[in-house]
Figure 1 (tube, rainbow, N blue to C red):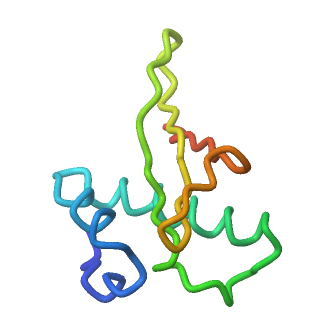
Figure 2: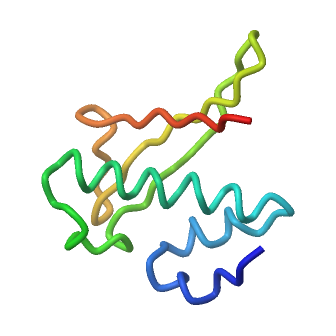
Length: 92
């Protein structure tokens, strides 16, 4: 696992705390992929400051065994959940 300390400035305090688990690298990939997808979908591109986006990710229960996650974006403290939702999946 790579040291993620260098990426701390790109995450919110809540996101950084969410990474404090054994599955740290996997959770980081979910956050980073979600942040990139959100910025690109809005047309902001990689010039968007990722720390402005607090991506609240929760696992979705699936009967078929898939590992799905839903992301709720909050930008600059404002929830954009009504306008934007992210769906992420971990493939084995």
